Length: 172
Image 1 (cartoon, rainbow, N blue to C red):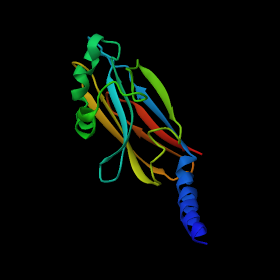
Image 2: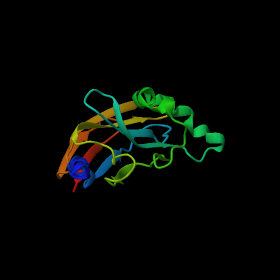
Image 3: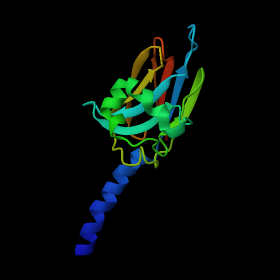
């Protein structure tokens, strides 16, 4: 009987936690074409924060990952919010998070619910934060609130300069 009492709470918590785990997160980020004299591809960081603005998960950071001796990390400090929240504490490159910067256009990123970033994320309200900065250019942050509860949803936001349309889709 004592054995059954231990199994039931574990089974209940596993069942409740599996709701959020059954969903995937699909993020679309548009890098707009800018009419500037010397264009540099932006450095971009994407992360999930809790309503109290604490870090819940790092999703990706785009920078020049091919520079010798990890020199591409030099400009990551320009992603000021991301840098203060988590960037300065990381040893880069981070497996599954660091990626090459992207060209102009719409980019779709998929994160499985059982991935490192999302597997331990409890159900609740969150914000997707996308921050972009360019060498010799501007900087912009777009915040997209979403609910991580295992139910299908799509939320869109619009950047003004360094970022275009940003969307977050929770897909069961």
